Length: 443
Image (cartoon, rainbow, N blue to C red; front, side, top):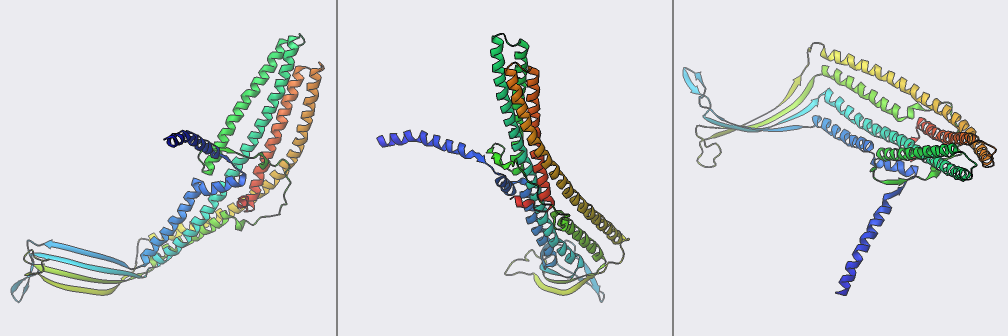
C-alpha cells in the first residue's frame, strides 16, 4: 500500500518534468542552414510543387492510357410489344420475339493516332516542367527565408543598440536627478531627459514587436508553426564581410528560370505538332463479340425448359477516319501556336537580360555596401568617442544637455546605419549567389 502511495506522489513530479522538457524542446535554436533545410522540407509552396510532380506522372499515365487497348462490355434487355415483320414471296415473316437480350465485349486499339503520340511526348515533357518548377520554388523559398532570417538578426541588433542607449540615458538621468536635488540642474533638464528616455523605451517596444512580426514571417515562410519559439545565433551576421571575386558574365543557360523557359518552349512546340496532327488520319483496330437471345416468353435466363434461342456473332476490322475540312479551324490553331512560340522566344531573351541585370546590380550593391560598412564602422567609433567626451564634459559642467542629447542621437543613427548596411550587404550577397545559380549552396 505504501509503495502505491509513493508511486502516486511521484506522478505529479513526472508530469512536471514532462511539461518542462516540452517547454525546453519548444525553444528551437536555428542557424541559417537549419532554417533553410527546414523550409525546403516543410514549406507549403515546396510541398505543393512536389505534389505537382506526382500529378504530372499521373497525367502521363492518363495520356498513355489512350494508346493502350480499350476494352468495354455491354449488355441489354428489351421487351417488344409490337414485333416487326418482312414480306418474302408474298408471305409475312415476323422478325424477332417479344423478349430479347444481348451481351458482348468490344476491343479497340489505336494503330495510328498522331495526336495521341504527340500528347504522350508532351506529358513526358510536362514531368520535366514540374520538376523544374519544384526546383525553382525551392530556390525562391531559400531566398525568402535567408532574407527574412537576416532581417530578424539586424532588428535584434538594433534592439541591442536601443538597450545600450537606454542604459546610457538612465545614467545621465541619475546624474541630472542628483544635480537637480543639489540645485545644480534645472527642472526642464530633468523633464527633457525623461522625455528622451520615454521615447527610447517606446522605440524599444516598437522594435521588439517588429522582431516578433519578422520572426513570425520567417516561421510562416519556413512552414513552421508560428507558435514555435526560436532563437537565432547573432554570429550569423558577419560584421567584417569580404568582397567576393566577380566574373565578367554568368552562365544564364544553367539557371533554373532559363531551363524552365526551354521546357515551356518545347511544350508549345509539341502543342503545335498536336494541332498539325489533326490533319492526319486515325487508324484503329476494332474487335467485338456479341451473344443475343430471343424468346416469346420471359425465360431468357432459365437453364431448363427454356424456349429462348441464343446465337453469337463477332467481327474484327479496321476503322479509318480521315479529316477533310473543318472550316480552317486547325490552321487557325497552328498559327496561334506559332505566335505563342515567338512570344516564348521573346520571354527567353528578356529573362536572359533580366538575369544579367540582377547580377550586375548585385555586384554594384556589394561594392557599395562594403564601402558603406567600412565607413559606418569608423563613423560608429567616432560617434561613440564624441558621445563619451560630451557626456564627460556634461558631467563636469562643460557641455549643455542639448549637446549631450544631440550626440546620443547621432550615435544611435550611426549604429543603425551600420546595421542596415550589414543587412543590405547580406541581401546583395544572396542576390549574387542566386545570380550565379548557386542559391542551393546555402543549404
